[in-house]
Image 1 (tube, rainbow, N blue to C red):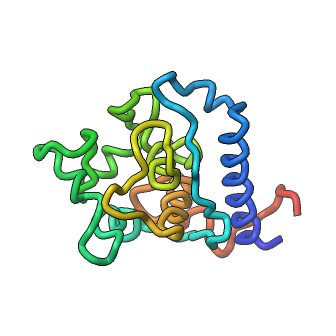
Image 2 (image 1 turned 90 degrees about the vertical axis):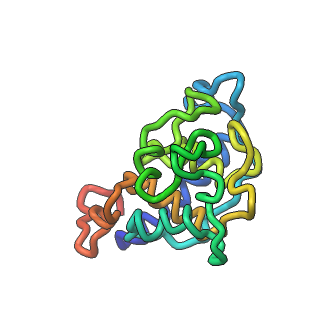
Length: 182
């Protein structure tokens, strides 16, 4: 199987595992959720969206935060600069967003983390934009919704380790699949 096909299948499998684990409530991640948080439900299926291998945080992910609708509407409308009192005490303004997300605990439930690099299925950011009923709070954004492609892009960025630079390190064309089942 070509490397890209392998990673497409891997993402689909991980997402389907998320859906199964949400339905069965048997995973270790769910055991760690507090009584204030509940398992997400009503999650959008992103498995049909092709995996994005090259994602630049500033252009792609910050671009979603700044203007997800293409009509000057973005997450930054509510999640403003820290000195302006952002919603949920989370600023998604360029220059602040990355450090506010990576390995940072949620104000809604400090047992939940916004972005756990390499683990989108455990990351509150992905659950908030992908599920009708996230573990805490409401689906985001309030003033619209992200397209399935934008949700998948956030998933892929987190799955690739949520780097501040470009995500193409492991997904280069010369990726060697030795040691993997073919």
